[in-house]
Length: 86
Image (cartoon, rainbow, N blue to C red; front, top):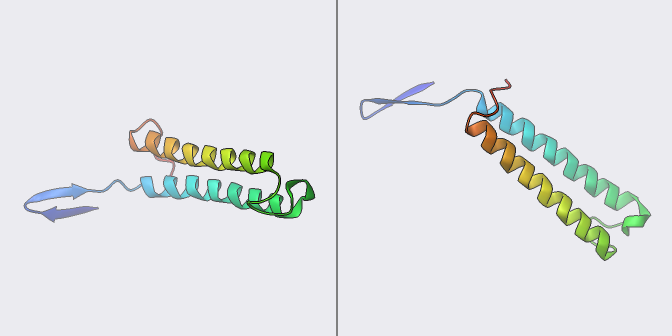
């Protein structure tokens, strides 16, 4: 898609949005799975963000890891190390 502005074209790459949505959806599903696990397994204290301290810390580290994975994969795709998937 090309738009004209001040006599020059602005090009938008087509494939980057699909990859970003795929990575975001994957990490979101893992987050929902973690919350379901924390709510339904009594070892976690039956709470999404409460419960015993070791499980809260482990859940926080896992969620931070998912965020880092999202930023890392999006950066790799933006800089061209990962090709257009779609």
